[in-house]
Length: 108
Length: 122
Picture (cartoon, chains in turn yellow, red):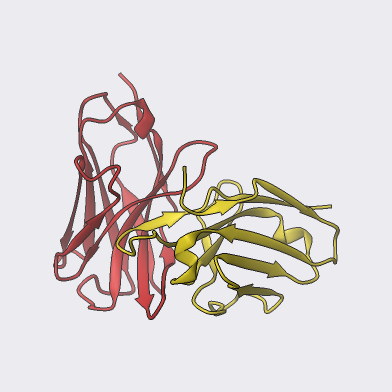
């Protein structure tokens, strides 16, 4: 089992806002990074640090970390946002890295 | 633009050693800022961090794989490599190489290779 827990699946209506969460004790000390993965493709970094987006990632994707839960929020979800999303951070020891189990986002 | 490309056999026999190489272009593996990493994904499943190597040669491995994993770097060839020994069918996965960045409070993989499927089968 992973030290980072994600809901397996989430759905959102086109144009609405969705929040994907990642829970873990290590998140009290470390920020989560978030990755988007579409079928047959490598993961793409979408959020890192406090709320940083790599170049090319739209500002409708944002991140936050209240307590031991990190959140990825997509405001005005588009069809192209349909993908698997993985959170990632250090483990509770701080010495190693872990991924959450992933959340499959469906845009209806 | 940094690019990473995995290479190696697509099929490995059980009990043998899986060996993959990642070639980095558009950047240097000898930079002190980055962690050159391996991550895998079994078919239909989630991502698993395998380990990374710092340019100095320091390594850090997933505790669940540590006894079987070796990651090394060849700065002259701009490559880093993964060896995973005593493989079983459970090691069948898409293997990704990636560049890790770290700063206060976070670690992230900002560039990824396209991934290579390795199947363990006799």
